[in-house]
Amino acid sequence: MEEEDNNHSNDFIIDEGFPVLNNFHYLLRKSKESQKKEKAEKDGTGDCNAEKQRHNGEMHKNTDPIPRHQFASYANALSMNFPSQRKSFLEDCATVFTARTREDSEGYSSGSTFFLPCGMKPRCALEGLAERIFKAHVDGLEWEVDEEDEAKTGEGKTDDNEKTSWKKKLLYDPERSGAEWWTLVLDTPSDNKPAKKTANGDEEDDDDEEDDEVGMHFDADYGLEEQVAGMMVHPRVATVTYLSDTGVPTLILDKKSPPMSDPERKSLNGDISKGWLSHPSFGKHVAFDGRLLHGAPGEYFPAVVKKHDGSEEPKAKKMKVDQVRNGNGDDNMALGGKRITFLVNVWLNHCPIDA
Image (cartoon, rainbow, N blue to C red; front, top):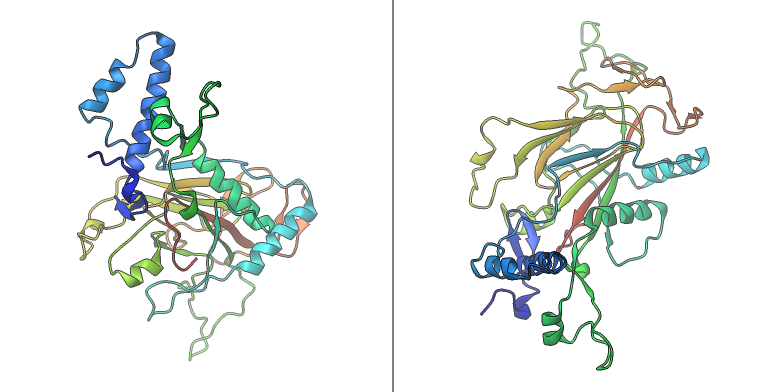
């Protein structure tokens, strides 16, 4: 019996940290077979190569189509041409911002995230952007039903006198897929705060302030991890869209979360040979493998101010940023000096419990 049968298509399976359906690799294989068959017919070589690969098992375990890259960056992916539009959007980001600093007694920082199912119509501008990001990253995750499948299921047929039509099927379950999103609106370091004094009257060194730092972490369904210790289930793709030109850069490291077979997390030890550093720039969008360790560690990578002539300069720990200018050069006073980001995690075949 082939694993491809849909008798258990609703089974929840974790494959290398990602939630998948038990027929996922079958659908992926059929998609690639259909593509190879179409190409072979155009070349006049038939489908012998696809059949050969199918029988020797080479196509049973395919490389997942997403994440397409470990890391990718897109400059100017988001534009807001009108100052009023930008001001309203940033104010919305501040309104829904709920993240708070982790207490010493807590394992993770507090705060809420939101979830937009992929079949749900957006109700606001923030959900609209989340939907656009989700669709951009799942684009192409579909396959066309071939005649053999249609003969078994009847899908895609019209009537006996008409040529059978093709019907596209998704490589994921739309009922359990969507965009988890949230915002971060964080203060950048400022020298306008009154200096703290020690008992003898000296100014206290407060370099331990977190300012706009985001601790290194993995994105995962932490509600599920609370129920099943050590189970780290991740989004397919994690994304950051920058809505300001200032703040601590994002650091993504080529280090995946430890599997359940490693309860002592020994796999986190050792050197990390590769990573990516992304500085904030309004409209910039970065995407990376949802299993990778990341954060914005300002202790090691101080914030950078992007000057209006396009150059950049490191910002001193206590340098004040008075304003953030919009694309037309006007001052946006409402959220000046804030590090503002819009975060979206692309989930397939699983909805995080607490979102």
